[in-house]
Image (cartoon, rainbow, N blue to C red; front, side, top):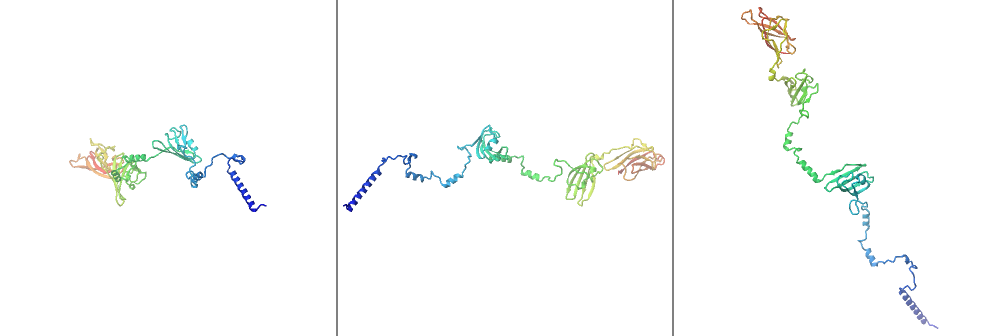
Length: 407
């Protein structure tokens, strides 16, 4: 009979043997059971060398190769639409046969372009620039630069293109400013400004220097300072209200009421002046007398009722610049009487009222005593030899030499 101790020894020995066999079997790497990769599913796995854990840990800790969440968000929010080519050069090239107006609107957004100098609807030179437009291609702008440091601009609005504009540079603008500043023709000097500021600022004539036309019916005395013209009979208070001719009117005002007015007739040269005093009262017209006014025109009347010229003493009459009518000469042989005219003076040469004169008569038949006649000139111009002191030969010799003021 086996003892308990013997049985235990056998069990320990069996266990030790089993472990030794298991350890030996586990240590074998030559696939003692001849298991295939297909049996364990390795036929579906690539035979790739796996990194060591140290390599894996080093890769995981490499912050150069990996991105952060902030970096991912930053880059996702960056420019995804291409502005240039991959090499940084213009994304679009406009050839000589291309049309700016047709090609660029095909690119929606913002792009960098370059162009051939002969491109259709281009600025006429080769440029590089930027194009920006809406999604419809109906609104956009071009900004471009050439090799001469010039900047060009062009835009499209509602499908309508503008013309090219060359933008001003600082140097170009400065050159223009300098040229303008040095232009002595368009600028004034301090002396000129002072001179002109002290010049006549109140306009006396029209802008072309000509006189101002007086409207018909205007009262001459109410006009302000200035040089005017008008037809005399159409201007109220003109010095010759019946003259149908052009007059010149020169008016200067001193204060609110005082005026000096000089009037010149142009066709029949005469001149007057008049003044308006402080109280507004017009002082009347005064006629200027010149050397020309001393020259008068003599006329001979038609003799009536038997009267005729006496020798070479021709009867004549004239009127001077003062409106004075003068009658000279001698007559003989006519009828003396209160109602028998010797001749008649024309209109304009007649007295304001009936006038009488005493003149020299012939002394024949009366010795040496001086003789005289009385002559009447009526307002109708008729001249009457009313009586003569020589009763012997009353009509032998009647002489005239007197003046009167014409009406």
